[in-house]
Image (cartoon, rainbow, N blue to C red; front, side, top):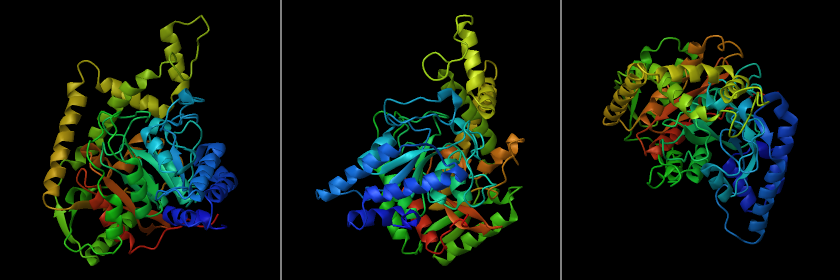
Length: 492
């Protein structure tokens, strides 16, 4: 029991299933570790200790009764605070939702509960998922367990740090422009973005509705695939949900773990090789990763995706435009924070005062950008043009996947950077998602797996696959993982 927090989700589930340890003991150990160590990391915004203990006791009761348990039954999980949780505070790390307790669960949370997982609590994030460092949380930054003076990535930094720091074996995040893969890369964890529409957005507090995608963090590829399988599948409450069977992601991860990629063609994107600003250590680790894929039997093919270089500016027109529409609901009238409602201010003044007090600087920046891009006389010039670029990027992916089974690239151009080093220059912050954004605009699945170290900090290898071929990325990721030494943060 002393080292249960260092075990994988698969190992924990096996111990619970054979009665070697109870779900209640496992949950208690994680809660104790969170109490002892999360003051330094700040991965969590809210701990649901009573709910976690009750869920664990239910698993123990079911096991004692001889009921068949699911593959993740009794395994603790952390959930990003952008997903609604019935009876548990959900704030999207914003003051404008401080104290809000939802009356319903997000679909992915419902499915976690149905699978018998134990939700420990809600994790910190960039406010409304807008950021790449978790420095834009209204409740303070999360720290990277590898170096407490550096960022854990974002916007799902709390979920990544919880897994990296042993404060949860698995967790859920959301990926809009790289917000699962980039934190996974800089914390040395596995982070996967499923095909858009493969996991339900019902119950997510919306940022950019055509991009937001829930997905897993884990310590290894198989655990990520197991969690992916639990939360995925069609949901009639989400109009963008894909009415198709979940790809065989767990089977693919197990097949990949045999370490054989013979017959697979993997593409490297020529235009990514022309990127300026990528750190030499990151590129060296990535190139070593490509060499490893060759040793596993894969054929490497260079492909051209000429419009990928326009993905970053297109994303920063599309996502702010959608966010300005989605966040209009936070008006101080229906729910959440209300400022100035003292009988002396008009409705418009109450709205303005509420938004001024409730939204942080990055959220305000993106709302203003999006509102301008959608304004009369500019919508065709900016938002319309960005959507045309999105179409061209989709064509690039389609053409590439006619030549190869999957694409590989670095996950992020640099390792975890020190706090405050990029907040003064939003463009430099946005570059963190340079390699990840194209997959969001396309809608296909992508995963980041640890790929060694640069200057003592983790580097990620990204694998991108065609839409609804999530199994392909898991196979490649699992095969690559067999060649890597697990990354563990230094002891604090």
